Length: 473
Image (cartoon, rainbow, N blue to C red):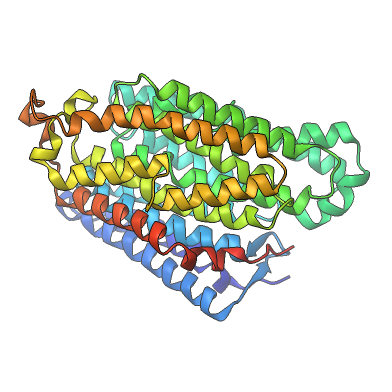
């Protein structure tokens, strides 16, 4: 058994910071609880440094009886999750500063982020379910952090849906264990081909149900608009970004490592789910007037595009790198949009953004980059991500799915433009109070995320090259 704890420095840094932060915050006066935020940011930086060292030394390995893999997907997932977590911390500063539960907010954010990290490297069904719980339970509390009516409703819906799909996932894990007599992916890959087809199919559906819930994909998407609309904006940014990164990498690893030799036609299942998710997300976003609900349905449609990579896992070498790059580009672009929403807390509808370009030109520019980026317009990272993932889908034999994705991309331009047109209106501006900025931290996070989205689009090859390595068995 390889029990090398240094391989888990990013995960341990977040968990250690959460414990130390909780103890420290219990003794700090309210006006000094910002120290826990500094500790949280330091843990993210430490994790990024450790990840960079892993990349430089090429120390790919599996640890703790192969239950956790540190390979290309894990390393890239760590980079995306930790960078996204830093941006969320920055955009949260003004929202929770001086709050009586400020310490608890940072601790919950660290724990949920650690859960997303563990999801990316889980190489065993039990490890996968433990990561699901770690990524879910703190997020339920974060959704209701404001303790108002909408936040309480959001937290309750999030919890109930999470409990339902978590139970389904645990049942699926038990069924796959009964069919393959193992929980480790490498052992399941050897035993499942000779197991009962029905048991494998039912078990896979159960496990996928939990991962689809974390990703916000059809048919486990019902919680996304309500939680996004009811939670504080930085929390909405978290739940629409980090869990998707962990869940989609975990799903890719499960399908590639445990079910690549199975007779179950999971590629077709994933292709159908991808088609349904992107189409439903786009159609539901068409006539939304709430900016947070519009972004919620936008994230559902983006998951549809990301699921295309899972549908062709093992069928083309382009699948993994297209998934990892798209996740990085999506995270930066989505967080840029949510940072603008965070920075303008009184602008809740599309009309509230009327005339923003004249009053807040920087935030308006970030909004343009993020919304056109989510469409997939060059030179943003999502454009290159979509190009990669569409190519992988065609190479994997699902040309019809790629064609549907192109049609959905064109259709999505409609509701993003519905948001942008009022931004540049020269008459009938929204009340000045609607454009009152929250503070500098949210604006800085918005600018940084937008810049990162552009950098990924312009210099994307620097990310695509290290994202090509194979997964460890």
